[in-house]
Length: 374
Image (cartoon, rainbow, N blue to C red; front, top):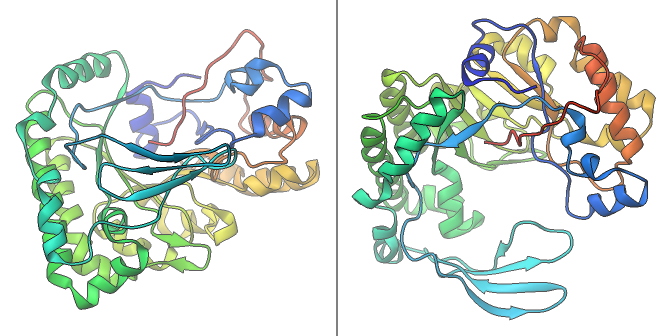
């Protein structure tokens, strides 16, 4: 079912809703489509349109608030197994073909303040960052029911992309002035861009990609978020929420429970994907935080490689009447549909989830899928 922006905002802010959403956040992992075809899946199933997933149309606000400048990528080596490139930041990156969708950096451009000063102009404000034609087009789509999203650079994610995970974590302690200057630069650029955008439209959702945790816990603790990231996020949220923005969503894998209160204090009120394997239990989180946090995801992707009983238990626990009636939820798998997920198990997952939500069985005449990772 296609939700309008109004319906989505009302659901995720706990204002008014008929039912939760049932969504697919990311889609299949590389190679799964081929597995499904061998198992007899139709092309509509492979493309996910056969499953009538709930979605809301999404449009970006028209401003580029991250790296801005030379986007040239130089291919250094290309084989059947991998491709090595030099990206716009000057990093050497490697993409392993056949099973990975994201390249991994082999080196990083920033080790000290002097390195940062050299590339800082790519992160500072310039009027060309805002495409007024795109902003006006977003306004028209918003009037037709699309959700307008402003994607801002992640506070930790940007530092990691510039320095690498280890050096970024060390920088908080040994180069705090560098971290502060990077955060202040992001903050100032984002605020100047959003000030222009808000002359033409009200942003519906602020979004940031972080991935600041692993299975055993966050990479940085709450004190570092409070000291370094909060001044950036909180000021941006204060500005856009004052203009009418209702949602601030963070995308972070892993166990972020130890830092969740700090993120909420930054203004964050929506999260995805809530990985059960990392201890992110949406039932317990809803009990603890109630309406402070909207949920997208939370259903264990690993249940789908087991049997029907496992899938049924997972859905009945997460999609209980209490959870269904609590609002602020878009139920979905906690990340990509993993390899070895049979098309038969996926069909069962969809049908049983629909049954618990009181939705009719799938109808071949109803199609549609909108990726919900935004």
